[in-house]
Image (tube, rainbow, N blue to C red):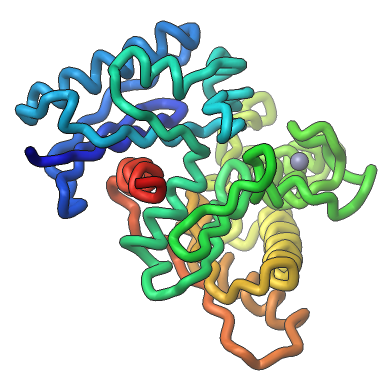
Length: 321
Ligand SMILES: [Zn+2]
């Protein structure tokens, strides 16, 4: 009897599903909008229905599915299979998602953070191929770092190892982050937090073309990393200041990760990496300025862009089989 693995990647706006056969080939995938209004039980009932629909479409019986990997953009207690909270699906919190879905479908489920799942995908199929140890670092709305070593993710005691964006860089100084502290790395250089700095500078009367680019002072809530990059390309002084702030703190963060883990392969994912060399080149030079050792350190851009979340979620199952 052929065996299969299913990967599910839950995002704030859409949920992607994929079926992999015994050769780890993705044989079918589909995507549905995520229902941000649903309570947790209804949310996972909907996912269970989509799993059954996809299995039927592939002609697969449930007992042929070895396991389902579920990657969630959530704060997760791995051992308990429990979702504590989900920042962009605010109702999906305080819920034993792994056992709920597993009992509903009669299939083993592995639940983990989506960053860790993406890290496994990069390790197996992407930019981390050939490295025994790597750090996958999404640089996006938030920043974090998933450590993969020998094909296994390192989760820590409770499950939130790698939340290094919340390491405190300037105690008590700066903007308060969702972690409850001021001055964590994320508060200085993530995509969402840099916008908060820009809005503070605007509120203090500083000038920027970004105000006109979004249609006026009452529309500044629409400033995002795309507007920031466009203003930077036109030489806007505030955009340059914002990008330099990100470069500085990302460089410091990467250096601190390097001396903490001594892992020499960084795979950078997330939306802000699309800025390319204008961000990553200076970040690398900042890192090199602190690193007084000549042994190689590789900064790579994530390669598993399409189906990354689904492949990574499936890898969660493979890592325990
Ligand atoms: Zn924080």
